Length: 377
Image (tube, rainbow, N blue to C red):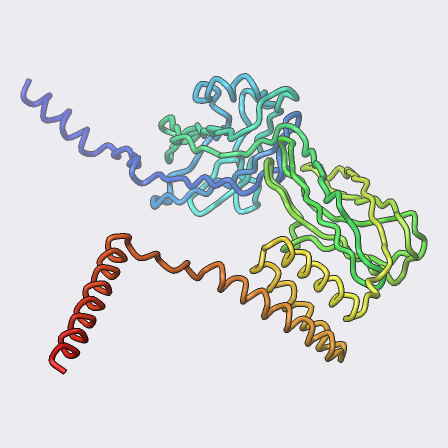
């Protein structure tokens, strides 16, 4: 029995030992290298491209029968109801080079695989997390020694639902004198559920000779939902005649699918005669107002208007009118001073009686002295 045991042990020693790689020596890098289209909306078919690289340290650790797929068991309930994988069983991960025969992926080699799925047209927008898993076999054995499953990697996608909807508001009081520049203010707000891009604005009018320029503050060309921008239309009135005109502010923009849209807002504006009043006219207007306020007893306001009138008359070279203003300003100050001066206080009645008694006593004493002097004489 002992001889048999020794023989068995010797036989085992002489047999070649199996070469098994360690799982620590097998390593893959999986990288998401492309998302198509770059802007994703509901109803789209989406392609996810991955690069798989065998970075194992053991030269014999090969990937056999690799399969890349979307693990639907890891999807959230909302995303699971919104997407449909077009390769439900996954796509094979194959070596496509010419360094060796076979589709297994050797250490130092890489390949690509593409997963596709569709999004329902009535799906909600938001962030979609797509879990991607790779399975296969690894090892030096023909067709792999051990099954293998990579930890899932998550691809985050922003899915857009809806379209942009721009609303335009504009100032309602738009008037300028002939020769001046008329400014019409307007604002644009995105009331939709998707962004608007390539935003541009223009202005047209029923005046054929119109010269105008449209400016958008900070050169904004993109509006997210809820955002707004402001702009101005500058009109050179010297290119027009007196009167009232109609104009149209036009805003063009695009959605996530590069589809073009147009939104418009009508406005009215007027060109009125220029102010040709002279300094004398301004002075007369201010003087009449000052006189009216002086007569009404509002002296402080009267001084303000009369001072304005004095300035206009001085610029017009009218010294007599300046002197008129000075006189009325002086009268207004006198009136204010009189209003601010308190009346004299009356003396108390008791003090008046004492004064009268004192005068009588003094008079009696003086009269007595006179009679005494006469008697001595």
